[in-house]
Image 1 (cartoon, helix red, strand yellow):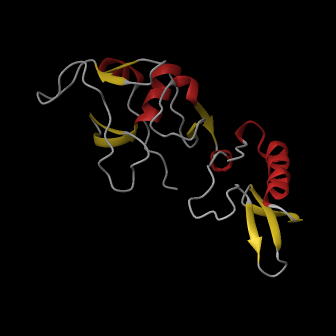
Image 2 (cartoon, rainbow, N blue to C red; image 1 turned 180 degrees about the vertical axis):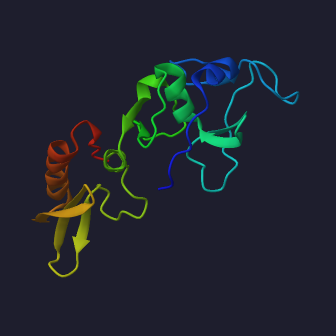
Length: 177
C-alpha cells in the first residue's frame, strides 16, 4: 500500500468543511472555488480504482492533493492525522462515514474486517471445497500467514471453526461474513 500523504492542517480542514458525525455527510463550509457552493456535499468516486470510498481534493501551499474522505473526517473529529495507520469502516461500507462506523487500524486489522469474497463458492467466509480430500476446508489469515483450521463434512461446520478462530485471532475486527 502506498504511503499516506500527510493531511492538511486541522485549522484548514475545519475551515473548509462541516461534518455531521451521525449521518457521516461532509459539506463545504468555505469553498475556495466559484464552482462549489457552501453546503454542497463533499466527495467523489470518479477514480476507477476508488469506487468504494469517497475522495476530496484540497489545495494547500504544498499543492493540490487528493485525500480519502474518511481520513479527513478522522482528523476533523479527533484532531489527529492517522499517519501510517488506516481508517477502517466497521460495517464494511466505505461510503458510510458516520463517525461511529470509523476506527483506526493497522493494515492487518483492516484485512480481518473484509467481507467474504465475491468468488466464494461455499457461501461462507474462510470455507472452501478441497478436491483432494473431498471435504470442506476452513482456513484463516492472520498477520500475513494462513492457518489451516481443518477439514469438515459440511460447510456450516467449517464456518463455525472459522468464526471461532476469527473471534480469537481478530478480536473486535472479526467478521463472519
